[in-house]
Image 1 (cartoon, one colour):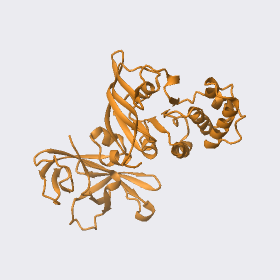
Image 2 (tube, rainbow, N blue to C red; image 1 turned 45 degrees about the horizontal axis):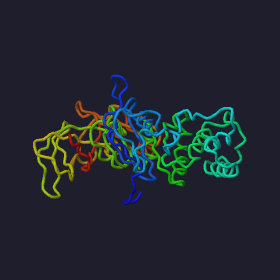
Image 3 (cartoon, rainbow, N blue to C red; image 1 turned 180 degrees about the vertical axis):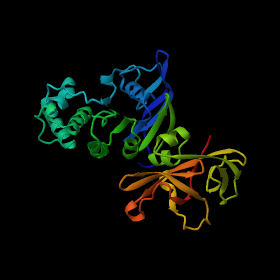
Image 4 (cartoon, rainbow, N blue to C red; image 1 turned 45 degrees about the vertical axis):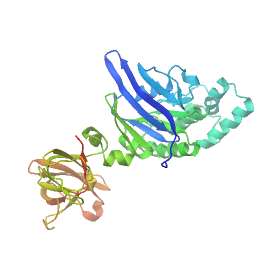
Amino acid sequence: MGDEWKSVLVLDDIHKSFGEVKALRGVSADIREGELIAFLGPSGCGKTTLLRIISGLIKPDSGEVILEGRVINDITPDKRDTQMCFQNYALFPHLTVAGNIRYGLEVHKWKRERIEARVEELLHLVQLDGLGSRHVDELSGGQQQRVALARALALDPKVLLLDEPLSNLDANLRVQMRTTLREIQRRVNITTIFVTHDQVEAMTISDRLVVMNYGVVEQVGTPVEIYQKPNNEFIAGFIGYVNILKGEVKSTGKDTEPVIVSTELGELEILSSEEDIKAGGEAYLVIRPENVNIGSLEEEAIGVNRFKGTVANVTYAGSTVKYVVDFEGKSLIIDEYDPATHGVRRMGDKVMVTIPRNVHILRE
């Protein structure tokens, strides 16, 4: 997406409680035209509740849902120009594929010729040409998902809402459907909100992520921003594996000079553009496993951010090996790619580990 963008949906200070449970505690977000944005977070964080409030299935206790400049809090789901695609697809088992897709069009009293043209258009869009006469129970899970998607798109809504739409598919089909879903979304350029608790799914499919926890928004950003510059330790740990190394800032340096941080491993040189880092303050370094280099002890110990450790655990996964390396009580997770070239180290091996200078310092 370019720098110029138009706001389609605004969530303004949304609150919702169920009895004593505060599901949403002041959620605000700005959804852009044509983007696919994921609401991501652990179970119970409020993401599905928020999606149902947008769809009109639940009313917020306070706050406003604004679609293209109009507050839609009191507008019924069938009239608010959003469409929900449910986790279980919610297809009509007694209808054919075409019957499911045309259902909403018939309810809205489209003319028959227009309905049939739209159904054929949607079957082609979701790659189900020629399957319109099949019953839905004759289809695979991935095909059923595409029927549900076609039905949701039939009335050309302003916003498409997807509630964990791929969770019922097996792992391989999930990956395929991510690609299919993204291609369809881009082709029709529909603003889409995708709810998931799967970090990889959210990272691979989205333009931006809204990371939620306990009913609040922790951070909004692109997958790269969320992964490389998390706002806090929760986000850093929730999005992929991470090592959090606590330390104290010894010096902040000047201009291009590195920040010196004293940690449990020893002193680290860190390149940082953060302006609020002060000497004497605590620092939490976000160190991703794939950014740490692991080598043999034969390598010279001279160099920046190098430490001797012992391999404590090895997990071989074909294209990668995940190591846990112990440094006299402090452990780091390290990913090494292409083990066919590097070989696989064994538990107890002595290794030289190099931590990069470019790591993110949490603002906490």
